[in-house]
Image 1 (tube, rainbow, N blue to C red):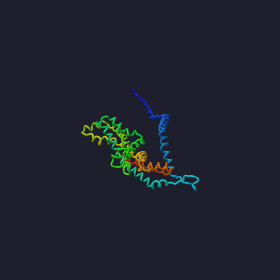
Image 2 (cartoon, one colour):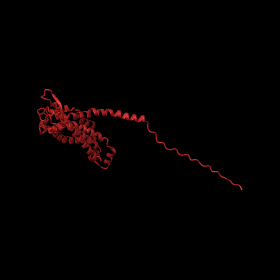
Image 3 (cartoon, helix red, strand yellow):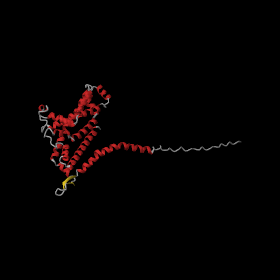
Image 4 (cartoon, rainbow, N blue to C red):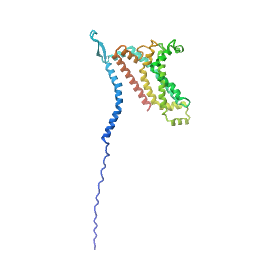
Amino acid sequence: MTTTTTTTTPTTTTPAPSPTAAPAGPPRRTSRRRLSGIALAAPFALLLLGTVLVPMGYALFLSLFTDRLSGLGFDGYRQVFTGLGNYTSVLGDPAFRDSVAHVALYALIHIPVMLAGALVLALLLDSAAVRLRQMWSLAVFLPHAVPGVIAGLIWGYLYSPGIGPLNDILPFDPLGDSGVLPSVVNMATWQWMGYNMIIFYTALQTVPREVLEAARADGAGALRTALSIKVPMIRPTVFVALVFTTIGSLQLFTEPLVLRTFTGTVTSTWTPSLYIYEAAFISNDYGRAAAASILLAVASALLSALVMRLSARRSR
């Protein structure tokens, strides 16, 4: 009897290699990217520091001091720390409060009239019914190319009695107590409507044409398309224009300054900017001028933040 023996050879299992992490990027390349980013942002940061932050910091410093005569006055003026004294003096000055009232009333009239007119003109240029668009856009934009002082002189002569025709045509005196504010509004609207029209018209060119064609296919007319599609789609641009127009309205300066040479109705403190100019360069009260400028900057920032918050809510 024969016995057969089978020998089984054990198999050896080779362990799988452990996965290795992907090699990280070269540190030199990361550092170069950081340096290039810093180099690109440095010019803007320096410009912001030199033109905005440093002047505002210096104005804030000046607003806390005032110049007073030392002793009997033979030693000249010396700076004295007053804290919030300049701010209370400005806020308690009736001239400053009147200037704020003038600018507030000006902004309530100028901003809606100018932006609404610019939007209507932009919609007309974007419509198919208007021909010679370049000619009309250039004609409306041309007043913005005129320097503010030159535009003020032109309108000043047009408003002047015996020189310009507007004094005889209008039912009120454009340089009188009740007519100077509408005159200033007209000057600013004439100069800035074309500028904002170009901004709105450029934004309208980004509206997808497929959406407009679908609206026309559904039977929407030109007016319905403009109000229901075009205007809502350029709403962010409208809010940005509203922010810049609000800031510009608070800084109203050139138009009333030029009209002062034609009428005595516009005083040296008719707007906050004129008030600051008079305090700094006529009265040499730099502390009061700095305090007024800080208050104007804070008001501009608060109104801009309010408009941007409203824009963010409407875009949700």
